[in-house]
Length: 355
Image (cartoon, rainbow, N blue to C red; front, side, top):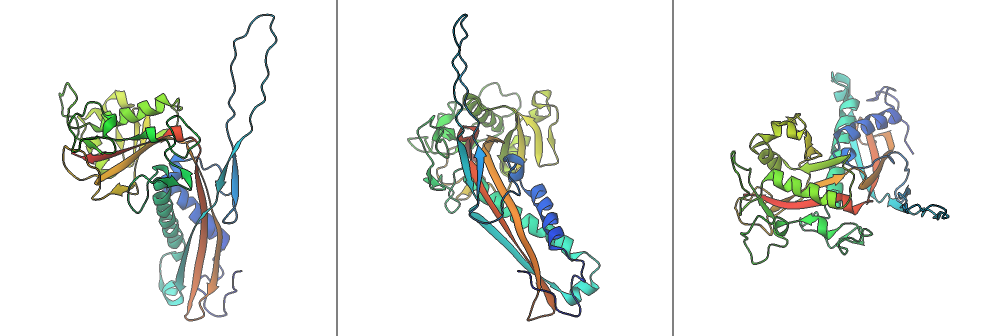
């Protein structure tokens, strides 16, 4: 319950509205988050408490049969299965609005605080959900053995698991690379280097950024994933190599848009490209140089389709009260969210290092 303000000077002077503040933060949150741009967040705002469950209707499978003349048709019952997205994550913010500072300030502290709180919450969500979507243990950078309690590495083709092992690309998936740091390439990162201008063949020690993107696109194509709404999330090191890729990103083959404003590329092999510093890394990260593969120093990039993962989030409570120990008002808010992989065949990851 929000506590009433004490008499005398208030940092808000009756102008502070928890409801308006919540809306400001909510809007800024969605603008700042990479996750809101690559996941299905149609369920935004449908939750009220931690532990709530959002039921998501699963797309029914329909059988197509050959039609024969003078033969009765068969009518099937549709399976109305659904997914359950549990709201099991909660973050909060809390800050003071000092009376004197507010009195003499020429800026709107409430608006500034709303934007900053939203940015910080969006950043925390991005870190958590990107780790979840890449099947990575955030404390080790390694592919986790479980994700949300569900087996992460089901048999290839089994879409009931959280993630498909066959969609986790490593050096063994790049057939042109014949040199490895170990006797087995399985699990090793893919050494990447921009393909030099005029090169007519693939290298045997490295792959190029565009080559890896094409391989990830092929994996989605093999899984019959819709070509609409595909995205690629990369880190700044990968993006730098991509820009160096023989200047081919300016060609009409890639939509003619080229790279724009450093955040999104229009169309590269059917993907829109997002840059994020919140992708998981292992060891010293993807900047580790060397033409040999790495098994403990690499970065991870993510490709997918925006219906692959659902997220639901809500700033469900913002309140203000008088600080009993100082001349200031305290504002605090709680943010709830959950995430669920709906289509594991529509997520592909790749571990890489810069060669």
